[in-house]
Image (cartoon, rainbow, N blue to C red; front, side):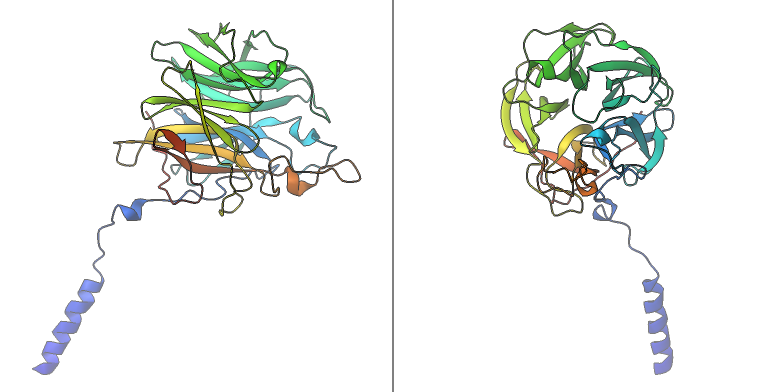
Length: 350
């Protein structure tokens, strides 16, 4: 009898061992990989923008594909660049290189920098900095080129934006509640401040006379709406400056984010020229804001780098990686702790 009891007790215990508990909410959370993405072709991914591809039903990342693994004089690796494409089918966890966009509008090897993409009335609109040819040192006439597409792959060149400046890059676009579109951009001819213009249709633009953000030179403005307010980030080459606004017209300067090194792999020294995506959380209730930015992990400061005896910047200083982190609103300002654990999840969009 004792043997039978022991047998049944053992059998019962064994049966419970095969019962798996229901997954908890905590088990569904996912960390953002670090780095989030490295370009497998040139290892120089920079200036990312993340957009939902309605045709493929996946998230796409467009970025400046710097030719970081090419030994060339001075900053030549930053010229002759295409716009690279990576896609994710698992809510942003993994990104696969898909190729580069065919944007050439004239013969030769030309340069494309810092894309921004918006969707309006069934069409994608791409605004990207264009420079004819490739150069060894910083320079060249920089214009913002406008393209349209139905699928994010096949782009039709419309025109260069008519802006009263000889050197503009780094477009950031946002549609306002009244339906008008605003574009912010770096105007190098005015001391590298952020200027703005507005449009009803994304084709014809009226430039505002005064800078949106003036003062110290900067680049890579990114405007977005989060938690009932407007925000802008600008790249000061030592992290990103935060600005707050109630109307996207008058901006109040706040602190820096992404200015201190992270302990995550490839996430040093500071975060540069990024994009912000505001999405619903995993339960579809509240808002979450993720920032995508690039780093120079081989540098101790963002601008570090000395040319070697051949006039070439060493590879360790050229390469760059894409990272993702969460933005939070704390005491009226945006914060970003790059080392903090957070649930990284890009939900499917309509």
